Structures are given as C-alpha cells and as structure tokens.
Amino acid sequence: MKQFQTVLTVIFGLFLCLNAQSQDQVQQQADSLQALLMQSKNPVVSKQLLQSLTNLYETDGNWVEYEAAVGQMLELQKKTNDIDLLAEAYNKLGISSSYMGKNEDAVGYFQKAMEINLAQNNIISASNSYENMAAAYKDLGKYTLAAECLLKSLEIRKEINHPRIFNNYLKLAVIQALLKNTGQEDFYLNLAKEEMEKRDSLQPGDKALFYNQLGDIYEKRALFDSALICYNHVVAYSRQIGWNRGIAVGIGNLANVYTTMGLLDSAMLYHKKSLALSESINDCIGASEELLFLAELAEQRNFVDSANIFANRSLYKARTCKLRKQESLALQYLAQFFKKQKQFEKANSYLESYYALRDSITSAEVKNNIAALETKYQTKAKQQQIELLTAENEIKNQRISQALLLIGALILLIVLVLALLYFRRKQEAFKQSELQQQLLRSQMNPHFIFNVMSSIQSYLYKNEARKAADYLSRFAALSRSVLEFSTRERISLKDEIDMLQHFIELQRAGMEKPFEFSFEVDENMETSFIQVPPMLLQPFVENAIKHGLQNLNYQGKLCLSFKEKETYIDVQIKDNGKGLGAKQNQKHNSKAISIFEQRRKGIEHKHKRKLKFELQNLSEIDSSKHGVSVYFQLPILNND
Image (cartoon, rainbow, N blue to C red; front, side):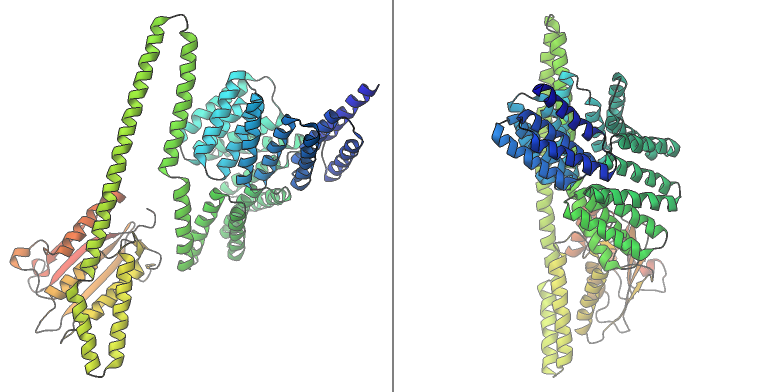
C-alpha cells in the first residue's frame, strides 16, 4: 500500500507538470507540487517531484522560482550524495543562466554537468550538456567552440541512434547561416530532414524547432506563404506544451514576414506581443531582437524618437546580457540611424564600435577553425566506417594507411602554408611600420621646422604677438595631427582638410608675397563621416608651393577640389606656378612622391581596387596656361 501511494504521488506530480496552461493554473500546480514535496520522506519521490517542479517553471519561463527549486535539488543531493542529481542540478542552472543571458555562467555549469556525466558514463546526458554548451557559446559569439560542442554531441548520439540527432544538424546549420556559408547550411538542413523522416513520432517541441528553421529557409528565399505556415506551426506546437519561448519566437518570426510583405501595422502588433512575452520570461536574446525590430518599424513609419528609444533599449539589453551578436546589430543600426539624421559624430562613434565588435566575431580565423573541426569530425566518422567494413580485407586496410598518409601530407602542407602566411604578414607589418616612419619624417622635415621657428621669431621681433601666437598654435595643431595620423589606417576627410589648411597657412606666412589658396568641397559631402587614408595629399601640396609658387613675379594661386563618387573622392590639386621642368614630364622625383607611390600600391593591394593617378603641366592641355595639375582618386574606407 505504501509503495502504491508513492507511485501515485509521483504520477500526480508529473501530471501537474505536463498540463500547465494559464498563469493561475501554473501557480496552483506549483503549490501542489511543493505541498507534496514537503510531505515526502522518500528521496526518490522528492527527486522526481523536484524534476517535475523545475520542468513546470522552465516551461512557464519563471526562472526565479526555477533556480529556487534547483537549490532544493542541491540540498537533497547533499543528503543523499546522489551524483546524478548533482549533474542534473548543474545542467538546470546552466539552462536558467543561458535563458537570462548569463551565458558565461551557463558554460561553467554545463561544463561541470558534462564532466560528471562522462565520469558516470552517462553518455546521453553528456551529449545534452554538449548541446547546451553549444547554445551558450553561440549566443556569446564563440562559433568555433559552439561547433566543436555540437560535433561532440553528434558523435555520441550517432553511436546510440539518439532520436534528437536532427537537432544537432539543425543547430550546425544555424551556425553556418550566421557565418553566411549557404552551402554548408543546406548540407546540414538536408541531413536534419533525413533524420526527421526516419522517426515515426516526435515530440511537439522537436517539431517546433524543425518548423522554425524550415520557416527561416522559406523566408530567406521569399516563399512567404510557406514561411507563414511554418511559423504558425511553431506557435501551435509550442502552445501544446506551454513553451513560452517557442511561442515568442514563432510570433516574432511571423512579424518579420509581415514586415517583408509590407504589412507594417500587423508586424508592429506581433513584434510587441513577442517582446512582452520575451520580457515576461527573462529571454534576453528574444527581447533584444524584438526591440531592434520595433526600432526599424518605427523608423519606417517616421516615428524617429520611438526608433531611437527602441534601438538604445536593444543595445542596453544586449550589453547587459553580454550578447555580442545582438550588440553588433544594435550598433550597426544606430550608426545608420544617426547618419540619416545627419548627426555624423554619433554615427561615426557607433560605426567604429560596430567594426571593432564585428571583426572579433566574424573573423576569417573563426571560419577556418570551424571548417577544421568539421573536417576532423567527418574524417573520424569516415575512418570508423572504413575500419568496420575492412575488418576482413587486407587490401582495404592498405587503402586506409594510404589515406592516413595523404591526410598527414595535407596537414604538413597546411602547416607550411600557414607558416609562410605568418612570416609574410610579419614582413608586411614591418614594411608598413618603416613606411609610416618615412612618412612622418617627410611631413616634419628639419627645413620646414626651421622656417616655422624663424617666422615665429620674426613676428616676436616685430612685436606682433598675436600673429606669433596664431602661427605657433597652427604649428602645434599640425604637429599633433601628423604624429597622431601617421600611426592610423584611416581618418575623416575633415581631419585631412584641416591638417592641409594648417600646413598651407604656415607655408604662406614665411613668404614675402603669399600665394592665394582655396578649397572646393561639394556641399552635400559629409566630410566628418567619410573615412580616407591619412596624409596622401600633403606631398603634392608641398611640391606645388616649394617648386611652383616660390619667387613668382605674379600672384600665385593654389586650388584643392574634392568631389565624392561611389567608392572614392576625386581630388585635384592645381597651381599656376612654374610647372614641371623638361626632365620631369611625368612626376617629380622627390622622396615624398616615392613614399606616396608605395602607399598607393599598398592601398590598391589591400582593398582590391585600382586608384587613378595623373600629374602633368597645364601647358600640355592649354598652351596659354602654366602651372601643374595633380589628379588622383582618394579611396573611401567606410565599408572596408
């Protein structure tokens, strides 16, 4: 009778967990389970009641009560010394940490659970821990580690023909989609479909996961009706088991499709529903994504203030929860948003933060590491299959040996190639550093500094303190700019023009008959936002002044014009000076020009684009004119 009562208690607890619907019902069922737990004297029954209680809170997204129940698990484990219960408690803490955006804590808990499961030879639970670790690493933007964990989980599950093998393939497809590897994404999706077809019966949660990923594929390929059907399946299957996060994801995806179809009112309504549900279950990822979607919709409907508020809420949520991918998306949106609002200083600040974060997430090294992991896994799987098939055949064993030798040769070749690339990169870095030093010396040569000091001294002797102070201030600003810009890869076009203006003013001040100069800049050009290589123009300006406009018997003139094209700036430097000598009919053979040529070649090689450059006497175009015209294309580096 006592045993019958124990079994009945457990069944009743499980029944309560599986039939959770409304919030009031959830609370009533939780209270009932707690009451049964207080009455229970049997550790096995208490363990099962706690499992039911945590499952109930997990389904409802009540993470505060969930972690409190896990704490009761840990207290029970201390009394019973049940090592499997300890692993389960760590795994559950990892799940709650992950859903609340504390992914670094989640990785630690999943790692502990996995180590215990492997030590206990509980390979099914170990495979689950690997899968959970992969999800946390993905949300942290560590795609290499995420792929490694998924492949380890897949290896275990294939050995035991686990029913959730399809989920490993789906999540590997998601990582490949994040890295924009379409071929690999389709490869893993096809494997997932094949696994789904093998299984006669699947749980609603598994079906929701599958239809969600399939809906993403249809949406990317503009099959909107099919995508809407899939996402409605996601919501329906999630509601069958009371899975709030699945419901929120399905509703949010429906809103995305409505946005693409131009149904903005419906999209706004569905995104707000998804946001409210995500926030109610402390889903950091979902909330951050929905806030950014709402910002984009508000901007489309010209609600500028609302768009700014939603975007900043998304960025704050992503940073609070350390979600690098969501943070990068929010930064990118804010940069474009403030650019449209013509607040270029803010736009540039957000853009620089986005570039720094994006480079750390989607570097080529990450993609190469994942490719290496996949090759390692596939090679191991093939090797195991070959060993099974060649146990009775010596010829096949020889083929395996040959294959291993080939793999070793390939690995050696890869190591040699990587070493060569490493040393070449080091050599290029050294060459670039040397070029920067030469550039710095060419900008601030002793002769120029001596002339500046002499001019300042002359003003002081004449008691022209204001002119001396202005001259000294321009020299300080120029010196500071040269020292700072010579170590940077890109600066704004406004900084480049300001530096040139200081340089020209300093050159004019030391002349008996100063030349006239002007800057012609397109009115619509956003010079503060456009990024260009630093100090490419100064050598030509210096040559125009030094070799063209000195000691003229007429008024000298210097003009610099800037016109924006799609990927570059048209720059022309023109003077009415003496022109190039007969032996210099192509370009002036100065050290500064030589440095310019080296820098131009380096920029062309790095950014994969040709930059036009012309230097000629104006008399060659029109015999009535004199002077020199320099024309070249200054590359815009904002999108590189």
